[in-house]
Image (cartoon, rainbow, N blue to C red; front, side, top):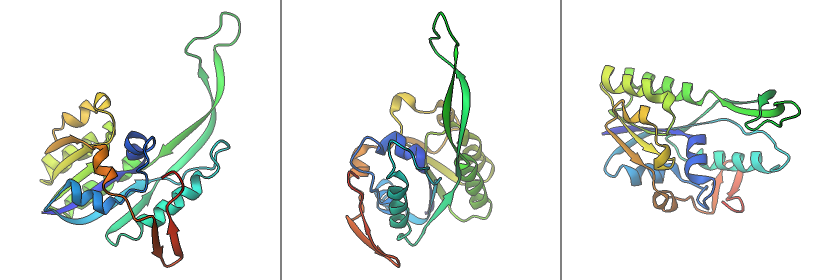
Amino acid sequence: MRTNVYVDGFNLFYGRLKKSPYKWLDLDALARRLLPGQNIHRIRYFTAKVVDWPDDPGKPSRQDLYLRALATIPHLSIHLGRFQVSKVWMRLADPPLNGSAMIKVVKVEEKGTDVNIGAYLIADALTRDCDFAVVISNDADLAEPIRMACHDYGVGVGIFNPQPRSRASWQLQAVPPVFFRDLKERAVAACQFAPKLQDSEGEIQRPVGW
């Protein structure tokens, strides 16, 4: 079947990749490993440009290298949301007996990914851009567009959960999708880009520690 794959970049990174040495992930190789025999028609990767942070100033440049690596996959498109950084007052979980129960913190939010995934999933289902869809995410906010694609528009949807099984979304499992499976570390370990790639700008080298 002609299959589209929708990848929630931050859900995948924080659920499966952040604490691993397998961040240099080739999403085309992963899709083909997870879906043997399927015709991978399109891969849509959803993320937002990370902000520079004092404790990790190299984060934006590492992400840029990875996005360049992904762009070498001909049938992959990158869809960007945005980061929102604000200072907000929040309540302490264990406030002191004497003193304020509130503290001012820097709040970093990634905006747009769930909306963008849902929008493209429904648009592709309506235009029959694929016969089957696979979503790599554990975001419960995707339950309704997945249900609509499956049950209203006749496009089957499978889900690979990159988060620990203990945190698997019951809302997604209740849709129900065609399948709900865990994304295993051995799958991402087997699907890494080569350490060095080339694009029109020159050499792309795997970041240290990735």
